[in-house]
Image 1 (cartoon, rainbow, N blue to C red):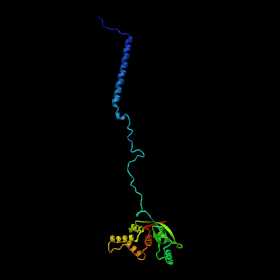
Image 2: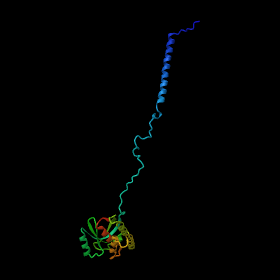
Image 3: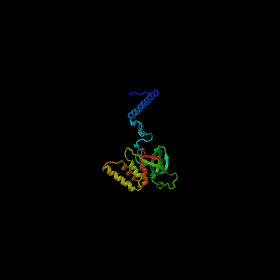
Image 4: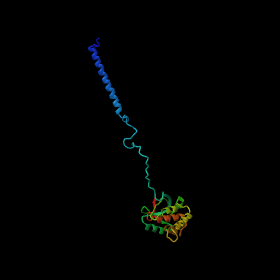
Length: 223
């Protein structure tokens, strides 16, 4: 019996073609599998929520600015009113005017290189009422007690803000107690000297201010 089978040329060509196509398909499938396996999943797409270098513009940290604005050493200025008789370029001229005009309770207050002759100083306009006196008028001034070397700026503020003479007397008594018996206190001595010839609270304030205005280190006046 003859088991040999004869194939035509066309059949052989078709078989070869099918073999080539199957080979190409197999290579493509294997390559796709290899690429899918080797590529890391995390590299497929970048994480847009992670900043490249530090916080985005305008988003900064929550750190607060601890810088504090400078403030006056002894608080805000005190609006006051003075009873003014004249202004002079020197203390000598001012004191001569006080003497000539017989202004026993007046004093020369130094400010901005000039000397103002005042006879009263208070918190209200009525405290410095000119009362129709010729050449006398009411002048407004902002008084700023400072933290001077002697440390009396706050004491000056307390006196200028007092509404009764008893408040000043209590302040002096407290001051003497804190300093100690037998020890000299410049502030108390100044108040004692002024109250020796007047009990007018507006005159006391004016003379105390005149005293501390001489150096310019304990008080600042602005008009």
